[in-house]
Image (tube, rainbow, N blue to C red):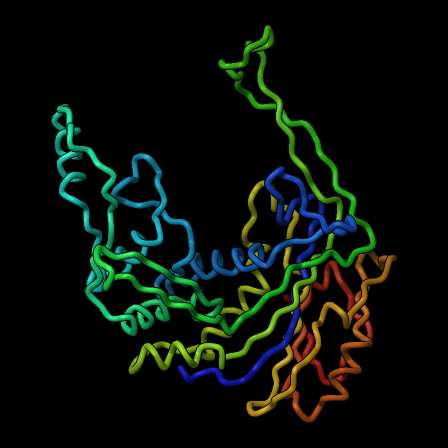
Length: 350
């Protein structure tokens, strides 16, 4: 597939109705100091990576995703970064277990005691150069899209490796552009009692809480700049994978469907609502402003649909028409209507 060379600016809106798109560690929707609800960029990236992993398991590999270590499957222990890399690239690196650890494991299996147990760390024996490690990382679609900070300590100092990849796709936090930020908590009941409850009620079933946002429309801005990969591709050398048109097609698909597909208990009611994709001409040096500043959502719905005014975005596109190759708008026509879209925009249903 041909290398993707054009820059892109765009935005994605995620709708949440009585759901929790991105909770904080207390289980409530995240809020800015002003009280406006928001979501981190990681929430949208997770939905994209999950979609790619589910729908393209043969063609693509998503590296930065939780997987259970088969060697520790009974305890449901996830991979460490080191274990994930070694599992994916056995010819480039292998895990080294110190002799004391091996003895400990053997005597544990035999039921004996080990007086020589130490603090020796399990390390990695690297069989490849830094360029070869970079090439292996570029073989993963999530790293080609979002980049990575990869650091691994080896058995010897020469085995330490650190690779920083500036991802072509940069996504901002998503801020709720609906005029209300109303969320609520409700009690839920477990069918089981807590046997450790130190009270007279330890024979009763336990209660919990869950929080939901009544309605929100999270707006994420994003940009795509293939030049961000040039340095690490140069380091990786011949046959290193670069960002391709096929990668971008899969990214666009995931931006339209990933959140809707990931239908967990907390995220039931979260859906991809809109995607705007503005492609610049190949040699353009234009830098467009953040799209979150260029659109406004009305306070009233019409026929049950929120109204998104694109007047300011239309003006920016018209002003810079010489640098813009195409404008695409994908929307969920059942929940959102757009006003004042650019006349040459290709408008499609998600």
